[in-house]
Image (tube, rainbow, N blue to C red; front, side, top):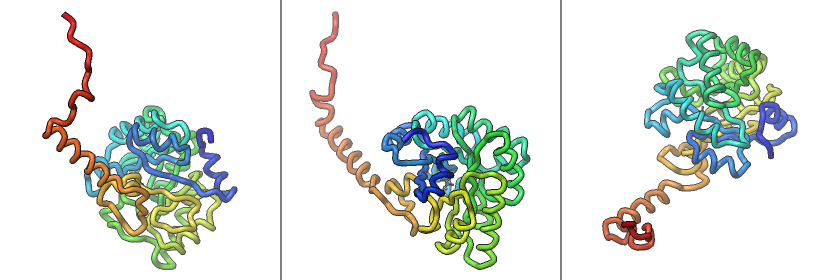
Length: 270
Ligand code: KIV
């Protein structure tokens, strides 16, 4: 498959093809994953604040830090669409700040699109971004940048909340987003929103009815202690890494490594 563009992602919903989205944060992993040509979208998520930087939430992540990571992922990626997550306070202050920061993600970071959390007062900003040619992915349900208000609680659990979720997603669609992430909502709520939209929904903890799925790479590769109900670990990398580290330490201490094998053998010129 060739490089995915925004219109390919929208078409996949209409063709009944599920969309595969995964987070990526650095060159080596992005290249390894992109070489499989099986991922449609890399999201350089502000979840890097947690899985790369070790913060409890994504709130401390800055624009400069995002650009640093987006650039590494863009440089490695030939096939997937690259989305840069707009970090907290990079789009909320006013529209011109949002345009400037989103423009930097595209121009300096090399991203193909940006993602913004929430609807409400962001809708007009999103409309302008789309009008000037910056594709946007929306994000509703549990929005991690609102941690201080929502915590990590499942959203959309009442009829009224589902109606609100659907209306927010419809407003984002009307503003021109090409897809919407639905995070941590009940399966039935995600079905209602997905059926109401022409654009794809991408679920994380939102069940089987979404048009696509996204997971945090560290979660699905079993790299940390991040397991949650909706995370399937497709590999357990942590014990493999720790086993290799222990073997290396043992061999260095015993003198087995590097031995004669892992060394330059040529002599020293006089
Ligand atoms: O930052 C992130 O990785 C995200 C996904 C969880 C959707 O926003």
